Image (cartoon, rainbow, N blue to C red; front, side, top):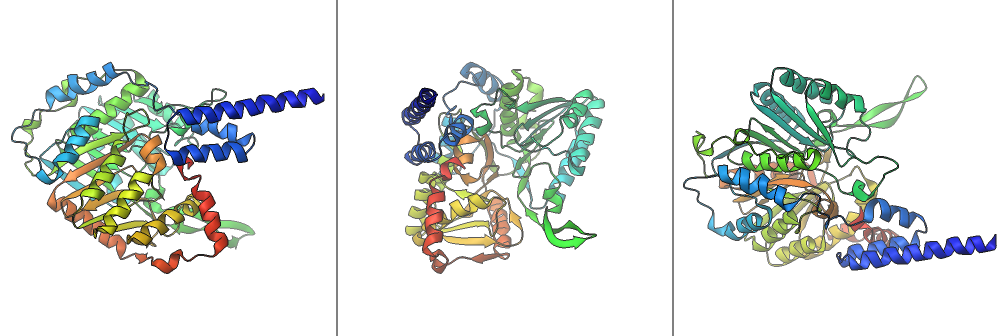
Length: 488
C-alpha cells in the first residue's frame, strides 16, 4: 500500500509542475502568474481544483470566428452607419481612434442621454420602453432574478412577444445560478428566445465559470438603448436585506436594509447602433445565428434628434486581443488636464490602471476615487485596502460612500468626457468578464455626470493618510490577500 501513496504523490507533484509550466507559458501579467503559483504551492489539492475551475486562460480560444465577427460588423452595422457631418472632438481623437481600431467601436453623433441613479427611475423607464416596442426587444443581463421585479419584467416581455414583437433575452448562467430554470422556461413557452451565456453544468464543469457576461444592455426597436450597472433584481429598488439581531417570536428576522446605489443610462440616438452590435455579437455567441438585417439598424439620417453628444459603445472580453476598456481608462488618466473622478464598487486595479492613477495624481491632476464604505464581499474589501493606500500616497483623494452599497461604475474627466457601464476597476472586469461601457464626449453630459459624483460625495467621508496607518498584523494580512487580487 505504501507504493500506492507514493504513486499518488508523484502524480500530484507532476500535475502541479505541469500546471505551473502552463501558467508560465501563458504570458500573463507577472502579478497574476505569481498569484497562481502561490496558490498551487501553498494550497495542496485545493490549488489544482481552483486553477481547473478559475485559472485556465481562454483568451486565445476562437469562440467567435473572425469571419462571423466581420459579418456582424462590417457587413451589417458598418454599411448602415453612414453619418453626415460627423465632427469629432480634437482633444480625444487618439482615444476615439483607439476604440475604433481595436473594438470597431464607432463614434455616433446626435444622442440624448438620461441618467438614472435609482432603481425606481430605471425600471420605470425600462418598462415604459418595453410597452412601446413595435419591432424587437433585445435584453442582455448578468442577473435576471425570479423575484417580484424580475417577474414583472418577464410578464412585460411575454406580453410583447404574444403581441408579435420579437424578444430575445441573454442571461448569464453563473449570475443566475440560484434562479429556478422554470422562470426562463415560462418565457420560452411564450415565444421568447432565451439563452444562458456559457452554461456551466456538472460534470462538465470547466474554467468557463471564470469568464462571465457581466454586461447590462437593452435595445428597443433599434432606437432606444440602455447600458449601465443595474441588473434585474429587487435589491436595486429596495436595497439588500440582511439578517439583524432582533428576535421576533423566538426567530431572527430580517431587520437591516442596505440601500443600493447604481448608475444606468438610457440612450436615444445613433449610439444605439453600438449597443445593438454588442447584443448581436453576444447573440451569435449563444445561438450561432447571424442577425444582420437592416431592420435592426434604423436609418441614422432620419433621426430628428440633433445634438453634439458623441458616444462610443466599447466592449471588452477575455477572447479579445486587447483589454479595450482598461486601455481607455489608462489613456484618459494619462491625458487628463484638470481632473478624473471615478466610482467603482470593487477596487482591485491592474498594474497599468494603478500606475496611471498615481502618475496623474503626482502630475497635479485632481484624481478622485469613490468606493463603498462597506462592500458586499469582505475578502475583496481586505484585498483592495493596500491598493487604496498606494493611491493615497500619490495624492489621490479617496471617498468612502456611506449612503448604502454603491454599485456604480462611472468616470468623468475635464468637463468634457464621461463613461458609464458594467466594468468595475478590477482584474475581473478588465481581463475576465464580457463588459460594456458607454464613452461619452459632450460638455453638458460630463457636467451632469460630475453632478452625480458630487451628490455622492455629500454622502461620503474622505480618507486621509492616517487611515493607512493600520496595525502591523492588519497590514500584513492585507498584503497577503493582495497577492490573490488578480484571482478575485
